[in-house]
Image 1 (tube, each protein chain N blue to C red):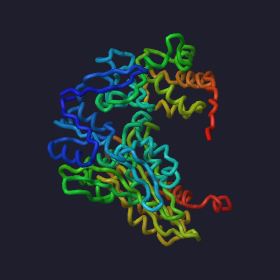
Image 2 (cartoon, chains in turn yellow, cyan):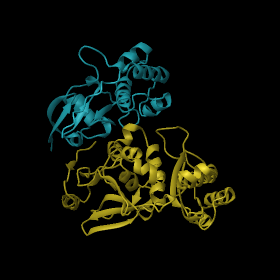
Image 3 (cartoon, each protein chain N blue to C red):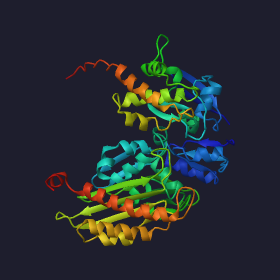
Image 4 (tube, rainbow over the protein chains, first blue to last red):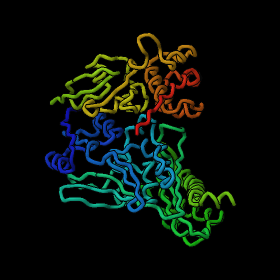
Length: 295
Length: 166
């Protein structure tokens, strides 16, 4: 690795100042992507600003009004093991579980996953179907935007010069909401998604779908929301036929490419298969356990 | 510019002056001369450099030394006592869980951490727990048998009595 200056700000203001003073500095969270790129000399930042000691950076907490807060230093492993993430934000917790190994998940952060903006980022579909927002700090103050808008292309995010992500806020899901994420990989671990699908479903007391989210990973330059497929589900009872129809539409909405991992055609077919499974898994998670037992 | 950091390695406090670009792995091996931790891929894929950092396993090739300031580190050198091997180490020896041995330090550190978190793992949980430790000799079966055996050997620590104060 080339030499660089290292800053470990203790306040947001210090972090903003460090990034202002060193315009070519890069932000370090878990480092599992950044340090690899620095070793390969893909990135040669003259300065690195570590955000792990900022206030609340390791905060992973849930409140009924504000939802789930994921601080900038919160690791994949923390989210994976969090009971509130598992129970209320299944797609996000499951996405975190797929990443790398335990060693990597102990270090890698959810925020880093979003900032690096890989189309295959495993936590992105879950965050997007849960309408998560990134909290950004910078020289002009703070702003928020949805994770969906924030991820702009492979490796590209919406951060402007001097800005960095402080955390992610995920709204509290409505009652009877469930979500799930799965990915396809040739290997069971230490792999990158060929296709990933996250889905969320909110049901009325009578079992009508009142809201649906479907987000496809690794089949477009960004994690792609399958809005047409979502609209097929809303207002309907989630019968096997409806779910299959939505899955087929989602596979039409995907814009996959052929690369070393899979052909475009295979990816499209996997979108159909996995979307069907994830809508079913999300609606199971949305169904209260009592009525599930009765059914 | 170097940074002065303090870290505890296997219970011993150290003060080290480190360049920001030096990884924790490099600090351990080159500055503290503890060469039990191995460098394999140096990209976080192989797990040969696994250490326990503040209770959690990490690939020390992807942690900067400066990031570990104030931390508590356990390396392979801290797993056995002077008198005896850790049950995981014993089991690895007994089962023949070592071939060339380069991945062994990382595998043992990961296995010890795994058993600390989950004293009775299933074979599937062991496989998933060790997914980040690659063995190029592909000697996985004996390792999984060894960890299963070690779990049986480790006696449950005696429960401490919690004195309730009013």
